[in-house]
Structure formats: structure tokens, C-alpha cells
Image 1 (cartoon, rainbow, N blue to C red):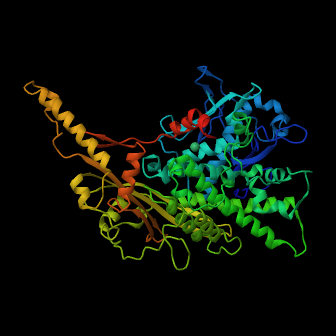
Image 2: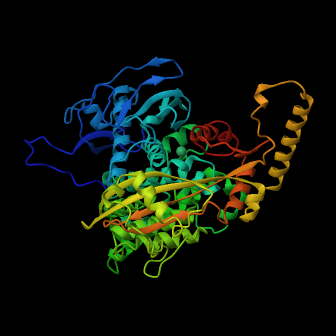
Image 3: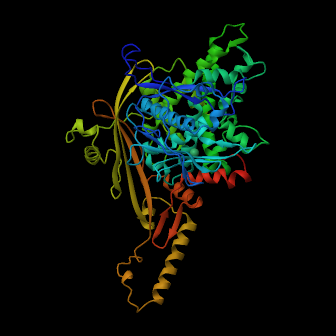
Length: 610
Ligand SMILES: [Zn+2]
């Protein structure tokens, strides 16, 4: 997955695109036989850091809300000057806050670089400032979260089983998971809005997938974790490289240490979604409407597809009478496949609808994105196996195409291009809006809905075989506030209980007003409570322009589409749709709240959550 290192000239010429940093490979609970923590050397974008550290995209702020204290700004050692303890994984680094700062900084930057490589462009945050704030010890809590309002990531710490603190900022999986929330929010800002069960679940599932697959970029770590069977062997038995055995390794467990420290009885990783075997009923099960549970189905579908590819490659590569596999080779193969897969899933974001995403959309987006930049899938069968795995979990692609099963169809309708400027279309929202306006009928845009272009992003992508793809991705969304009569006209049904409650609230308000009759209340002057109550509905799409400025794909959800009825019903049942006297209020889900619920109450009552 890592971008090839770009050396300019020889080693005496220090203009390099990346620098190496030591990080904890998985978390402090994964140690070597000598008791040292297993470390990894990772490449992050090179830059001259200020103390903090503070770089061009990330700023470590060691503020602790529990104590109200600043831990100070840390100066990181220059490349090649790291203390031996950091490189060797001396257990003392668990209490070294300068190392904590480096660990969090490096993992956030590596994840950002991974997104920029996959998407083929600079990737910003969802807020105006350029630098994401990261608090490595932000609270005393077995928790971590991304907050758009605070423009940053907050990592907690908590006393472990031996009363020594456990630091979530030292867990690879937790840091990458939270960074992924921030990066996903920047690409699809409306995914944190209330929608159906899949959209909330996707934020969690996607963050877990990126965290799990990122581990595989470190070949040495993969080889080390594969060795952990009895004996610690150089060669693995054939049975060890079957899906059932690999699934049980630490490679497929998320946040091992945190899980163990929070639950001594279970003593395992926080989540082991990959162990949920294929079952088509989960997606229909009420328990799996809950976003976190549902997110695990997504993770299981991705990771089991990955296992299929990996084990098939290993079986195909062996001689007929061969019973042993070289551990290092098994690790390298897994690492290569994971690199292709993580890139495919990050690229998929550009091909997903900007609102009301469902797992089937994500699947079609991933297949399309991958086929565009890696047309030949013979080596891994990555797309076919991913598709088969999702189907085994009851998730069908939203679309399909004759030449590529599960992919979005090409946009074939003849659009008009004569009034827009091709150059500006690559970057200018107004120009793209003009294009959309000129073609609103062909794009199935609905009159009566407000339309806004959310983003226009040019990108240049490189396939693993050097193939280069240039595209521009533009997102727009539509919103309409409709009365019950207007909704009926469009065949959208409101939840019955919701309608009753709106009526109750209106009667109550009317009663209050009648009581006050005769009093002159200036606030009542502009009151429009007699106008019919309205409910908002959202839609939108993404337009993929090819390098000649022609629309190649148009992925969209109709603002008045047939799926709105089910969506409104879900929003009502999940408490996101609230009835006011004049209609609906939508209350957004907050990731930090979700994580809180997972870490505190919910977890104790039910099971592992964070
Ligand atoms: Zn999360």
C-alpha cells in the first residue's frame, strides 16, 4: 500500500517525500519474546515539525480535560536520532508522553497519506482549519472520539487491570479508526446526518476496515503475528493458512489491549467482526439495525472477502504435495492484497452517493472505483470475491453492468456541454452548478427542491500497474420541505405515529394561543403556525467527469424517491425525527455520543463497545 519512496538523487541529497518513524505496531500488549513491545517503522510525509509536534496537517495538543493540565509541547527526535528505547520497544515508552505524541502524530499522518494516495488528490478536513487537533490524553475514559465541532481527535486513558494506565493513543487500531472518521467526514459531510441504518453503520464499519487493513501494510508485523501459533515457526502448516485459522489470529482482532483490559473474563480484542460467518439473515434482524452491530456486518463482509482472496492465492501458489508455507511469503501475499483492498475501499468513497448511502451503494462504488483504475482483476479476483462475500451476508450491489458485475452503469444520456467551460468544471462549484442546471431533466433533478453543489474535486489516480486515471468528482445535494399533501402526491408516506404527534402538538399550541387571545404579543405577529407542517426530505448525487469533461457516472438518490418512506419510518423509530407543531426536526447523530454510549453504559450491559 505504501507509496514508493521518492528519493531524489542519492542519500546525501536530503529531499525526500517521506521520513521514517517508530510506532507501536499494534498496541503495548503485543510483545516480543524478550518482553519488548513489538514496534514498526512507518513512512510518513516528510515535513519540518514545530514543537507540539505541529505539522502542516496535524497538531498534537496534550491537554487533559480530566485534570485541566497541558502536558506541554514535545520536540520529536530527528529522523535517525530516535532513542534506542523507541526503536526497540522498551516497555518504558508506555509512560513516555513524547513518544505518545510521536505515535499519534505518525499514525494520523500515515492514514492521511493513504487516503491522499488512494484518492489521488490533497485531502482536507471537514472544517475550515488546516490542522487537525489531536489530544493524546484528552480525558480519563476508556474511549476515544472524533469531534467535528472541536476539529480534532480525543484519546482517553484509563486504569487497567493492574491499575497502570492504558492509553488509547498507543493503539494503532484506535488511532487509525478515529482518523478515518475525520477523513470520511471530510469526503462525505452528510454521512453524519440522520438517514437509514446503513449510513450510521458505515462510519463505524469503514473506520474498522481501514484500521484492520492498515495493519497489513506492515509485513514484519503480519509475519510476527502469524508466528504466534504453538512453537513459533518459520513454516506454517497448510491448516494454518486456511480462512478458519487466519480469522482467529490477532490480525483480525480490533484493539486487542483495550478489549483485554476492559474485560478480563473475555480477554480478547474489542471486536472480532471477521468471525461473524456469512449469514444472510443478519441484515434483516432487528438487533442489527443498531448502527454498531450493523457496522460489524460490513466489516465481516469485507474481511472475509479478503480472506478468500488471500487463502485462494496461497493454495494456488503451492505444489500438489506441499504441506508447508513459508511464513514470510504468506505475510507478503496478505500485505499485497490488503494494499489493493484498502485502496479500493478508500477510492469507493468518490463513487458513493453523498446522502442516504446504503451498503449496496458502497459495494457498487467499490467495484466501479477499482475497475476504473485496475481493469484487469485476474491476479486476485478481488472484485468477484468481494461481491460474493457481500452477497453471502445478504448485501446485494445496488447496480450491475454487463462487462463488470456489480458496477455502476455508465451515464449514456446526451448532456449539453456547450454553455460550460471545461477548465472551470474541474474546480468551480458555480460552473458545475451551471452544468447541472442545464441538464437538470436528464439528471432527474426534481423541481421544487433546493439544489447545492457541495464539492468539486479533481483527482489523478495511479493503479498498481502504473495506469493513470484523471477524473473530477462533483457532489451535489437536494433538499425539499414538503407538506403531508405534497408528500402524498409524491407517494411518500409519513409514519402514522409521527403524524399523530404533529397534530397533537398543533392542537396544544393552538390551545395556548387561544388562551392568550386579546393579549398583544409581538412574537405572535409573524407566526405561521397555521401553515401546514413540513417534513424535510433529502437527495443528491455524485457526478464523475472523465478527463475530457464528459459525465462518466452519475450516482444519485432521488429526493422524492421510493426509498424515502422507509427512511422516514426508520428515522422516526430511531428517534432522529422529532415532531414539532410545524413539522419535523431532524436531530443528527453525534459520533462522540455513540462512542460514549458504547464505552460506558451499553458495553457493561451488553458487550464490547467503543
Ligand atoms: Zn468509531
